[in-house]
Image (cartoon, rainbow, N blue to C red; front, side, top):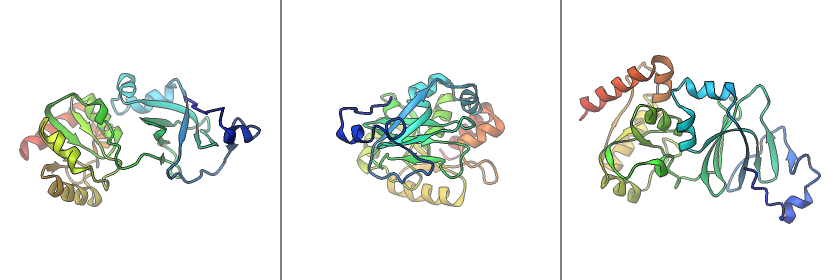
Amino acid sequence: DFNLGLHSGEVEKNKTMSIIGEHLRKQPKVSDTKLRIVSIPFTNNGRSYWDSYGISEGILNLYNVKQISHYYINISLITIPKREIAFSYAFGNYKYKILRPFNTEWKWVTNANASIIQGYNQLPDYGKFLFITKALKDVMVLNSLGFNAIAPQSENTIISLDAIAGLIQLWDQIIIYYDNDLPGISAAKAHSELYKIRYIHNTLGEPKDPSDYYLKYGGKKLKSMILKLVGKHG
């Protein structure tokens, strides 16, 4: 997990800085740089967090999600306090998203760019429904219910038209499923027009995304609602 490259002169020079790298209290900004993680087995709190969304450890393994105790931005070390939980989403080539779900200031850190489509590598070759949702957590929630899904890096990220064209050849229906708030609906409408595919969203006034809906109502109600939305707009 470390991938520290201890042969590197840059790292060797900073060897005396608290466990290979400067131990920072304030998180540095991330641009086009390397992230490295220190993973640990899922703790009870870590498993409980994902269990509340119906996401099993098998699904987490499928999508390369790990619990972490530390991570590095280049040689700068960030330690996760013991009272916290944190997770990494791995996309290869030192590209990660770091999620600290209960830390409002540092909830997300990523060096993944717009070309990385979350969940794309886990898709089967073809199928009936493919949802484009806004986050990997939602992709995993949908997977737990038997749906296939992918996600751009955010609702404002455009998936390339070449990628969409390729997916259209393999899936009977591709449906955008973003948040039911104003930014989510606006993005869904814009992407629907751009990709020439349809969109759905949770009923207004209900939880905004698949994850939050599952957390409030459970998987059975979420799946039923999705099937109704798909049928209603089909």
